[in-house]
Image (tube, rainbow, N blue to C red; front, side):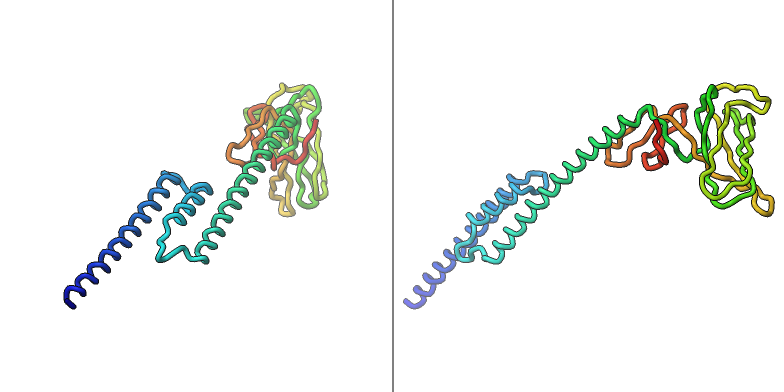
Length: 243
């Protein structure tokens, strides 16, 4: 009798154990199915996270229910996820407003004259052309050589002694013989000499006209396209915006 009772008891315990194992496996399958249904091949969002949480609560093991601390931690994760989604929406809205502001700013620059740091300019020789030289320290004399698109020297402008700062110069569009030259692209090479008599190049700032604007699709700085084939510059490179 005792042997029979032992076997019966063992069988009952084994059946109960197998039942719990099957229930646990079913819970795991249910949770895995919910995960697949909620997320698919994409990253989990707040809706998928909530669906997983509800599924987990519905299929928890009655012998080992969901721990309160773990449940609170999952709720905190859900709250963090919600906050991140809200932050992403806000950043996207700011980015959209920034692009709109860029487009409005760009439309106001087309056709305007801007001053940029360059040595090349499209010159209309029917009127005087004004530029400036960046002088880093007081010098005895500043010379500007104007050459045409073929590199031929057209005019030499002597500014004389200059103090540190920007020194303006004007070219009347005439060559050394006093004759008007054709309008077009010209290069302005400014230089001075140090105490040893060596030539030192100086930077020039010249006007250019904005013909169009290229907006960045990745949130970068917009580019200003200049007339006369002078290429493009970044908005931050503008020194002065004229009429």
